[in-house]
Image (tube, rainbow, N blue to C red; front, side):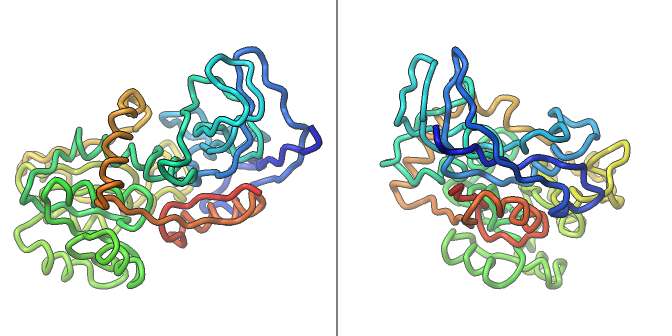
Length: 339
């Protein structure tokens, strides 16, 4: 094959916020699939906040990326060659591996997708891991009921935009939190949230205005000052879905890679009988993917599920795009159009 395999490697482990020098871009030969493998040419790469944890050595729920190895990530693309039953050249798939143009993967990690159902890139966002994360976490932990108040941090992001729309489908009052007027306008006018709070303003005053009777479900994507403002407003028997704390991901790692400034007094969890639960979608979520996809495609067809993507052109630009993601510079689900 005349093409080369463009790859982004982890050159060194970041100390605090990642910088371009933490990555290395190389060209290598296109890999040959072994027996039982499928060679996928990626067309889109998903960039997600969890990848920051993979760059660290600290103990976490998944093995960190080795120095000199390809950065971890999911891709969507086309099968080029197959030595596994059920896949043939030309098949459109989600589940390719890594920040690279070509990857050899086992068929168990691949999902055939129909490009007529939705754009290919949507299989990395609203129909992919972020969407599944929102669906599983809200259904299993948030358990929203009609008439309840649901607050979603990072509401314009890949997970947050899906969480809020599902909560609206369930009949809830939904308040988003986002950064800046453009994102807040998108959350209310395009996604249909009841209101959106700009976290750059007076959080306490805005929460009092939009949630005068308190909060029943809080979807946590951010941590930091946003969490501190929301926590006292949780009602009795409220549910707090701990999906991520992006405000703390760049804290220099010690014994706990999610370290940072002190949080709220969790003694209120007893008094208010709160349910505070973290989850990882890979634990049980993918086993339920068929039902998730059926639900999402149905809502999309009915016009009840909208999404926004932030598309970066070129794999060589992935490191800078990822650095911006951790600063909140993206607007919507961040994907890289490979080449």
